[in-house]
Amino acid sequence: MTKTPRRDNTAPLTYEAQAHAQGYQRVAGLDESGRGPWAGPLAAAAVILPDAATLPEQLKGARDSKQMTHRQRLRVAEVIKHVALAYGVGVVSVDDITALGLAAALRLAYQRALDACRVQPDFLLIDHTRWPEQAIPHWSITHGDQLSLSIACASILAKTWRDQYMTELHAQHPAYGFDHNKGYGTPQHSAAIQAYGIVPGVHRLNVRPVRQAQRL
Image (cartoon, rainbow, N blue to C red; front, side, top):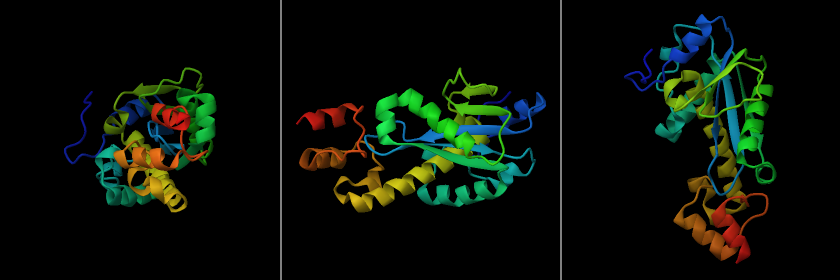
């Protein structure tokens, strides 16, 4: 079984095909955006693609969202929403991330993404996350956003949702540069925290630079 992306950089359907061959019909890919920033919510997406031979052409260029430009992600996101059997986005707030811890918050975001799908999957492909309490059969795939088209599509939807949210948040708190850094740690973001402090409900108190700034 090949585990390399297609030459045109579109993520392959190898894992989806293997799940379909085992009798599963609605295979969902799951991925997240916002696992590691200093500010902003955690977003996850679930995407159920049809078992169709035309998918690689329809979703040409869909891959790990971090390897795509902003314009490419927006274009492919609209195609994903058109061709998917179902998709959903789940969001966990900064306060809930602080209360639950990142691992539990991530699983909650995934569950909310699944709950938002108009049909439920019978198998899951999850990017590099173990979910032992999940009753739906699943595989955790390291570098799944590069090796599974369904996971890549989830990566794109999660990131486009969160990027848009952080851009809108920038209008309320322009000093922190959320439109560019999307809440991640940058010299500008660090300098803004030192100058203006943290924003309650926006900055994550479980991140060391934020905790240190809070004590200043």
